[in-house]
Image (tube, rainbow over all chains, first blue to last red; front, side, top):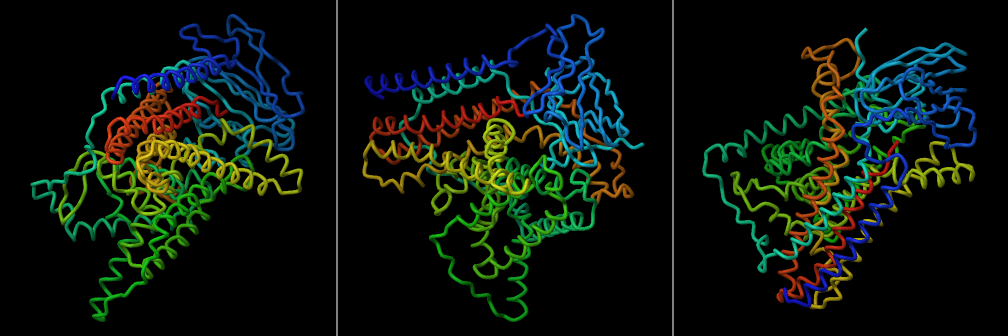
Length: 157
Length: 467
């Protein structure tokens, strides 16, 4: 490869590299994707997504408790076989104690996949899941009979 | 109570999805791809090395035995048997997709397993191909019984591998669009899959009868063409009645000579991308279009299927577009090659990218789902809960067996290795097309841009939250 050619190549690659770095920075500034080694953050133990219109689910947002002593337990409200406010997003660190509650106006079997925990809820009742988040990944919480997803449980390493 | 190994209806089989790769890893990987590209340009060789496969027979007796007729017949019988079992399970077994052998067998074990096996072992689907086995047996019987050699229609060569490309998209469409997640009752049932398999069998055997078994396998039979494409990357190949070794990836250089080959490899990358983006990068767009279609009066299932179909088509067009821009750029270097010649001349350089995409997107799914395949699905293929053929019906999937980090590293490594292999193949081909080394290098800035774009797109898909 001759000298001028190599310069052109370097210039072209420099441009591409710059673009890649910019994309990287943009992505890095995304919320909730920072690398936080070691410091197990319980702050965003549970965040509820408000994708759709009705926003009446976020009954309890935890206010960054230092210890998992009495963190507010997020509640997923199921009405007519659908999660109110869309599929809820629950986020935990690996090894953390995970708790969430499901209330439903109809009798349902609630199933947390992967962890394979199933609980029945009566019509108008509620049921609480309480376990250690020791499997990494994104897992679905479903109304088993309807095959309707009500929450996505994210466990970060 | 037996612990029910479980997967949801939604998206056919996925109970667990990967965590998005974190931004720092994305940045490292993208930079890594670029640095590697620098080295590729600096160290690149000046004479084509991958144009000749340098195939040599393996001198051991076992190499000849491995491709002997009895072994081929046995493999064919196994293939037919497994197809029959899976179809039977789909028709007679439980409706729960995750408890029925059919879905996992077709969409995970075969569809994701054979590309990897083909790279390692050569075109191993060929002997196991149930339709080819039936076609050959039928042909042999016809000759034996009547002395009448079947006469076939001449295959319209202009069609090339287009039937396979269309079939490939149709197969993935069935899995990720028709079996849409999230809408009750729209999931892909084992029964539907079994019926689809029967319809496809009928179609394939009919085409084989018309055009000849081997002709159709090389051009129209989706699975032969698709898995065969990946086998081009490997070193093992059966030829002249024995097994031999060849230069890695060299066979790929002559794979794309049939028309429609580019469509096959683009279909592979595009469908994998769409599946990865469906619940991540494209989620917002899909929801928006879905809602406007709902407003336009379509039913919930129809609206989502139409939306997904449109996005799948856009993804395919996007991947093809990126590649064609690269070809268009190369054309500007001159050298007298037509656009069409360059377009097919570099199509094979996308095969490693296609394989990297597959690995990156499905590695963990395959790893987890095969645990089901070889425990409860094997012992209780119908999912009735009453049979336990091999004593493994009580088994389940150990989701702790792979950590999120391991999965991330495999994903990133796959994309970068695929990137390097793609660059290598493209560089080698450029040396053939542009005798002048400098022109060849200049043409490759364009392919480099294509490869970097596809690699970064792949990384981007992995980095977008799919929750």
